[in-house]
Length: 253
Image (cartoon, rainbow, N blue to C red; front, side):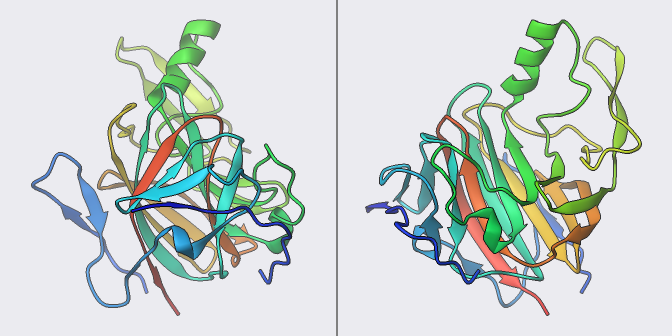
């Protein structure tokens, strides 16, 4: 079945600490909490905020975003405390997309085509090629982003980063620093993302203003003190095709 998500003509928006189990035995390592209360999300659970009629489609249970124009699709109801899992795959080298958490109503109101949610906490979905292009064009490693699951506040949203600064070692043994002590952007403690054309698994826990991210089965990043700590979940892509599948959510007290 192939479905399209029609754009909104008017946005009148009304807008337990558990340990994940790392699922072994498949090429894609996963962190997933078993138990009751999980529900699967499909395209029908989202609204096309500012894309074209064919920007967001669904085929065989996979949500597909063309990335043209830039923009997002948000869930139809706001969330406060929840956990979610999602698998994603870029189809274009250096593709850029993201999962937005706790977006307030104002993040989407009258949002022009080609623009992203104004506010929220972004869990970045970035292809490895984005970093590689930076290295080739600048002759040095990026000092402000990675392709391995950065988490950061957008617009008027706020967050205190778990890892505002980190030192990595390149494949050639060169140490380089990303971020700074005052950064609100949090950087992953491990570099685990698979490249273009390969699936990646995110487990995200968003509870009481704290966000934690597992990438391909390992906890790597997060932040605390998020404001606001309630709002809409949104998916987005910026200029190129990305797929989301096995999207599940469990709301918590």
